[in-house]
Image 1 (spheres, rainbow, N blue to C red):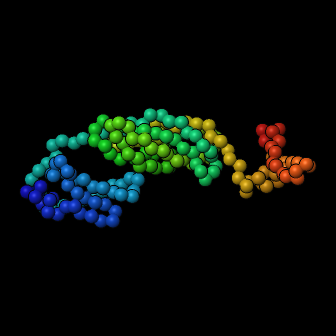
Image 2: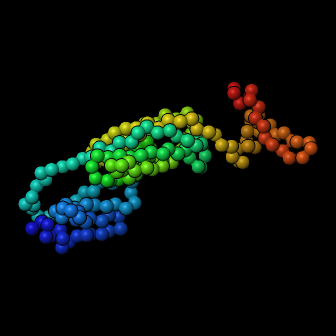
Image 3: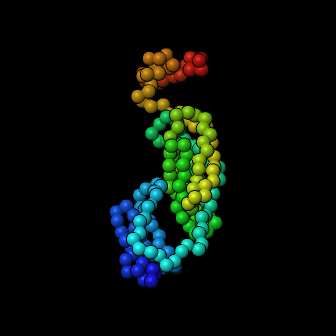
Length: 185
């Protein structure tokens, strides 16, 4: 009876979620959320069920430690190339690195993704949580990031006495140079 009702009423589509019967097991309903990184769904039913859940599966997603490359304190961010593997059906997993959240694909073969993260320091050692359902694992991002000078920051460094502007007498062009002794203090 439940399977017949599901076939009649589903798929149910809203802009934020789609409920549809599973392709293989029509008594199973899947919810797809197209644009959120994580979501909780609360469903209220009227009536009684004549079936109960007899089997639950909760996959474990795994991501190996990765190296961060790129810059800190800049708009381009740092990059980490990762690969998410799962024992079981392909899915989307949620990654939390401090206060930054990501949703990435996870597959048996290992689904590659690139995380873009922003940091304010050069040396980074960041633990991240990976969750597929109620199970979670961790992985570590490490790296020594580069500082990229911005055109807006150069005059401020000259004013602070952290760099000097040298003028090439032959060509007349000016190039900023850093006084190493002053920046190391």
